[in-house]
Amino acid sequence: MMRGKFITMEGGEGAGKSTMMGRVAEWLKTAGYEVVTTREPGGTVLAEKLRNVLLDRENNALSGQAELLLLFAARSQHLAELIRPELARGHCVLCDRFTDATWAYQGGGRGLPLDDIETLEILVHGDLQPDLTLLLDLPVEQGLKRAGKRSEADRFEMESHPFFDRVRAAYLERAGASPERFAVIDASGDVESVWAQIHDVLEERLEP
Ligand code: Z5A
Image (cartoon, rainbow, N blue to C red; front, side, top):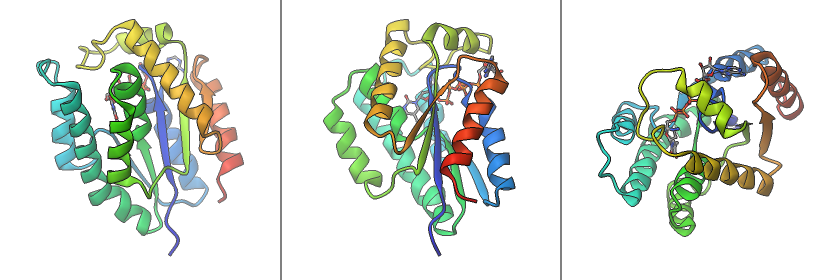
């Protein structure tokens, strides 16, 4: 059986990934795909425990390298327990964030060595990359305003404006380097205008 499609959603704070996940999943089902939705960090019982450690604002002693290793540990578990088996069954896996987030947040935002990220990426899933990555892009100020309307900030949401500027720049750089995989969506408009762009990309890039 052919492996299923692996689709990831990426973007900075308050870009609207969660808002769009449901619509993308519905579109995929209607187009005939069996869809599994998941997220990173997380997606399995163990990886969700690591997510809690990563997001807990009390863990301010966590070093950049420890953060990076925990993210890839969670990803390795996620791949072994959920992503790879579902793809092998021919199912479509729709994931809220994946390794591009590590390049953007830990590489761009934190300034961790890109060689380390590359080494871990090759070790954990060098043979597997998403088929399509929807990057929801919007000005940092606007995203923070949207995200700020929610509950208490987690460990990442407490970062500074320049951190999120670097995250955005790193995402756009990655998208520019792999245009065949990425679709950059202007996420600054209202929900319907964002969905219209995503809908066009799905129609264009995915075969039923
Ligand atoms: N992280 C990392 O550092 N490295 C990694 O490798 C990975 C992750 C995988 C958890 O991610 C954190 O982990 C993340 C990066 C780090 N932290 N940060 N920051 P997450 O995805 O779970 O959390 P998040 O990025 O904070 O998600 P988010 O802020 O919820 O963003 P979103 O899902 O893109 O947004 P949303 O919930 O759909 O929308 C936010 C609000 O805006 C909400 O009130 C919506 O109703 C509203 N909204 C959405 N779209 C619109 C439009 N178009 N117009 C107006 N209002 C809108």
